[in-house]
Length: 511
Image 1 (cartoon, helix red, strand yellow):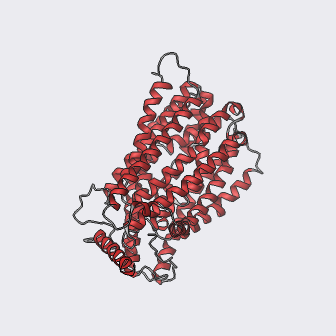
Image 2 (cartoon, one colour):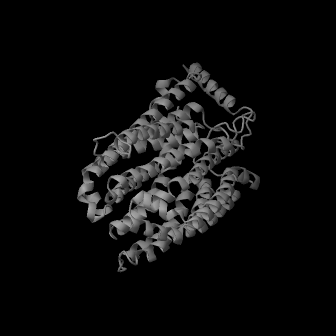
Image 3 (cartoon, helix red, strand yellow):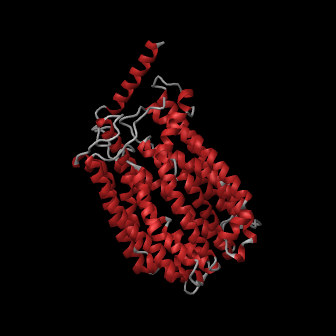
């Protein structure tokens, strides 16, 4: 029995050695001969991630356009889906955002262990997503009273109940997407979004678009049902594709498919150890954001619609490069961090990193920082001086008043999102190495700046005429402040690591 265990252990070690052979352990590149567009390389992963984030952004824009054609007064209702998603982000940015320090560690962990961690994550996220969906469905009336304008509140209950179960599928998608990117398989989240978007387009054209079948009378609930069905199709496609690819990989290892796919306590413990910090960060940030959103909704349907349209434009197509570069940066910083951890020792809790080591670790984030800087500057110049924002806002809302308010919002704080794009890339350094530092920088921003504003808006006599005077300082100001904080925290993290004071958890294989 002991000899058998020893053979398995030896084989696992050989497999890991084969996986990193020809690899510069600190480079994050698994194969020096791989072409630049390979999904295992930084530039190749950007291409996959661009396609992945572009598809849902296109659909999110189109869906608002369809609803505006059905009933312009219900556009703000569709934002309920977004606010449900904000709640879901707490679980979707918890364990999934912590995977890059564990599943992304391809130098110190066996591929069997990384796959087992992924399956454990999927099981856990599915349970959490199902629980949250049931809660939202049961509390639809209370949710509507807080996040839907009074004019459309009663008509929105069915929409909220249908959309509540999107939380289940978003939890699955978050788990599969993050874990497979950490496994250098960005093609899997691309498949998820491709399937969901393709089915969405077909059903939208057939049921709710302006070229729909004659005689059909779609409602906003029709759009909610289509979105739910397509989110489910995307989640199913992602899980099936991952099972297929993992089975293929495991066929060359001594670990059986049954063993690797079975969740276990060691895997869950390592995921929680990294994810507890990202969970706490997301919980604080989103709680404060929803606090502010409830105030925006109380300003009336026009103001709430304008804010929703502004976010659709800003967080839709324009944010795709930022999201793609962030996903690639966090993946490859995680790889380089794992390579350095492998060199200093799996059991070492405190290690001193040289400046050359730190530079190698942060290189992907710096590359993303430089690229996104030029992209955001170009987009800002084009959008600020073409005057197309108001026209686009009108098409999305079918309301002149909402388009006018959206244009006013855009002109006053759009420049602040340049700082957001840059801080997002710098934050990947903390997220993919030591997530507790990521929590520290977020707490500094939210507690020192956002929280005082949240309290202040409850004391200020705000109305639709003067609300933006305060909201632009809250939302725009927080983006600028966050950039300054992340620069400082990244610098402190680097000096702390250089001095050997940073504490790191030991690395354990789950199978």
